[in-house]
Image (tube, rainbow, N blue to C red):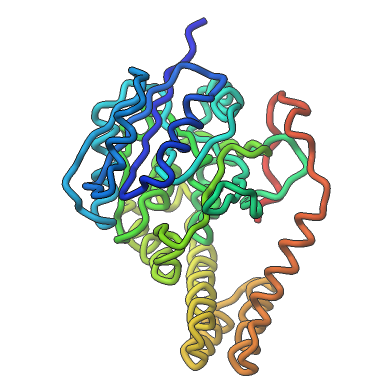
Amino acid sequence: MKRPLVTIVTPAYNQKRYIAACVESVLAQTYSAWEQIVVDDGSTDGTSDIVDGFRDPRIRCIRLPHRGLASLAESYNTALASARGELVAVLEGDDLWPADKLEAQVPVFDDPAVLLSWGRGALVDDDGRPCGERVSVHTRRPSERFDAAELFRRLTRVNLLTPTVTVMVRRSVLDRAGGFRQAGSSLYVDLPTWLWITATNQGQGQFLNQVLGHYRVHGQQTTQGHKHQMDAQHLQVVMEMERRLDPATLERLGWHAGVRSRALVSGDIVRGASHLSGREFRAAFAAFAGALVRAGTLSDRARAALGMASAVSRVDLLGAAYTLRDRLRASTPAASPAAGRGAARPHRNAA
């Protein structure tokens, strides 16, 4: 049986320190049917020269003039335009993959209902040493399935498909979406793309409860340097998506007043937390107070109230609560990733 080709899209800018390890993690894959397209956004540190040093014909480097973050979708789509794969995976130039990532994830797409897939992300530092884990779905099962409409609604509150280094998507689905999208944001490519795909396709997303990517945490990366701006833009992306979708699609997605209100509440809470971390206590209080007025669930009211208390006391009680929650989740035994690779059960336990 012919194995599907996976196109690996690797955007890079001045990542001389990390790009060799990135490419080597692809070369180490136990699944060999792949091509890697590195799109160099005008690096000045020799990043593309390092890529060219790998003599594997499956690796290509496309050099572009430097255009910056606002044109990130164009870089992704430049790679997509020359891609030959049936499946597309994202691996940014400073990230890595475990050797079995493709071997574990590609079979998920044997089911034609699956639009995209993602998994747990291991965090590594500058030197590649483990420093934590990022998990968006907390489950003891080996995998979980989400209906596309459910995924859309959850994505309006929090980017469940994270870290992006773990995501794989069907090429045909991306083509129907017009490629990668950056609507409503100068920084996000993943969130607008996943929102559009889940809004305009009927199918499912599958989470695999195993590490499918190593996400590098360092001071020069976009997520670290622009975190507060990205937090603020999440709601902008959602509102832009709402504007672009027709009423019939929104109705099919279950996008009613209550769901919209939860998205707005989440936006207020994220904005409040951003102000809190910047010690802008009055602005933080106002954002949390707005969330409390709109909140329709006990959990949202609790988060908003705790945020307001944080702003008044000038102690990040909300952040401490999140940290405690994450520690409790991390201490809960999870299912073995190797156990039970049969059909995934319907999802009931997302963050």
